[in-house]
Amino acid sequence: MERKKITFDSFIRGTIGCVIVVGILMLVERLSGVLLPFFIAWLIAYMMYPLVKFFQYKLRLKSRIVAILCTFSSLRLPE
Image 1 (cartoon, one colour):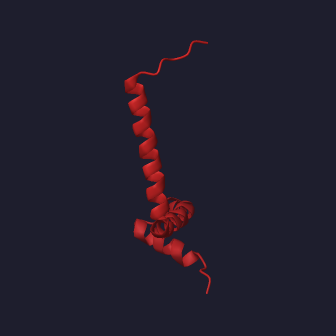
Image 2: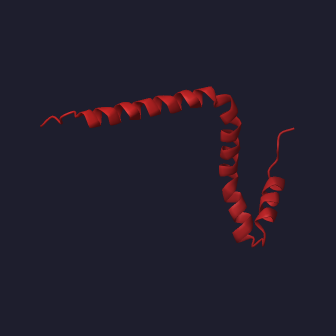
Image 3: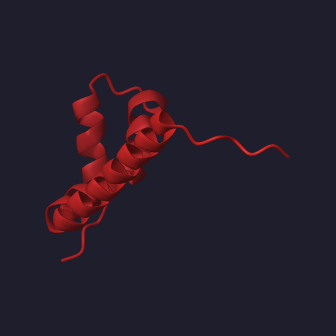
């Protein structure tokens, strides 16, 4: 197997790529307290989407807002 030569260009691209990845990881760690509620809200919406589609297409509700409200009303929230 032939080894690939490391040129100055590929070294700089790799270095910049590593710096960007480390920067993004540091930013996510710093903002995790703010991002956590958005992630939880996205997860809940992702889990409710099939029920919204059921109300909208199978039960033939005209408006998506009505389907969302029916989904909310059909789920029992903890007290």
